[in-house]
Amino acid sequence: MTTHRNVIILSPHFPPSTVAGVHRARHLAKHLPAFGWKPVVLCVHERFHAQSLDPELARLVDPSTRVEKVAALPTAMSRRFGVGDIGLRALPQLGAALARLSRDLPARAVVITGSPFYPMLLSAIAKRCGAKVVLDFQDPWVSRWGATQSSWSKAGAAHRLATALEPLALRHADFVTSVSDVQNSEMAERHRWLDATRMAGLPIGGDPEDFVHLRSMAKEAAAPRGEKPIVLSFVGAFMPRSTAPMRALLRGFALLRASEPRLAERLELNFIGTSNSPDDTTGFRVRPLAEVEGVADQVRETPRRLPYLEALAALACSDGLLLVGSDEPHYTASKIYPALMSGRPWLSLFHRSSSANAILRAAGGGVAVDFASDEELVGAPPVIAGALRRLATESDAFGVADPNAYAPYQARAIAGRFAAIFDSLVGERVASPSMELERN
Picture 1: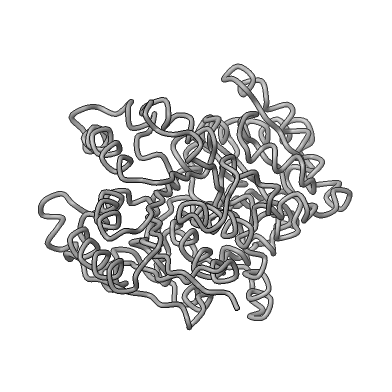
Picture 2: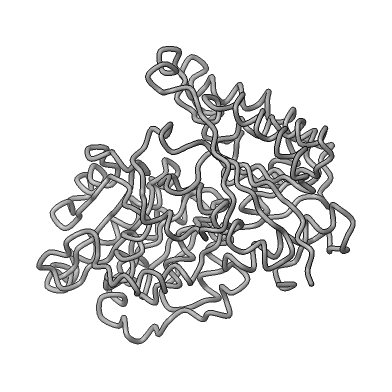
């Protein structure tokens, strides 16, 4: 009989929170028991969240999962001092709960996932209690974008603070994970004392069982499809560094309209959840770009972030999917995994060095367009126009994505890799330092 060891998953957001970062903790809580680790989730109680909640998402959490919830300083009070980050608002409470749980369980390992990143400073507490600590960076804490912000702006101040605090948190980490190897390389470049053999790139991945749950609910697409016969959907947040690739996509669509107007008029580009906030109904990101390119009449944008299962339904009910990345090589786009699992044909636009580009090309089921420089991206619209034409006229010819290509990125496989890291840290099983995906 397998003896389960205790692992604390510290994630300020957890279902019913709608913030994208909940899925790392959700996946680990679900699948770690299969690998001999008993998870205890430490999060902030949902009544202290600033965003709307998604009760349906909470139904995807096994009722037997132990979830410890703490209070936080209410936003009505904290924002008087310019603080909205839930990681800061609940830092003392999370620290006290982490000390108690680490001691009383006891916990053999603790994984702290962010953003928000400030709870990573609590790693010293877990270490004092004898637990091994894994810090999991879902995004860069110190980012190139942050470095470009005015030193007098809030974003610039946050960047300076991140630069000072990141090494303090890392000093107490036994292992570091992030969503890409490039992100790890950049972190190691900033902190030459980091041990590269104790770092691994682990994408968020996706869980095909979510689609099983979706089918059991027989949900319809959240956004009305209108009268256009061919709906191509982009589902997910639109990040600032995605602006240049998005402009290239829209220019490609404009070229298609100019060369084949009768075909192009049948298309509707549908952008859903672009603001990454469940309560934002006016923060349009794509529409202004579409207006500049003269294609806004065929672009529909829903800024507010949809509840998770509604977003999956929008994927499954679209005629095709638009997967637009960033101009950054390390950008991984966790949204690609649900897209591949949806079975819908797709068009992608990613940096050539992005792991997402490699995964999509290996999986098949769509058209992958990539670029390695700003110059290549400027020249991409004709290629994109041709890809859009294929997506509109030959969608059945693509087939579906090969499950074997994305099997290593499914939630269970990623949880298995985390379990292997925990095993190696506590000395109960030797794990390869490189943590190759093929092992799982």
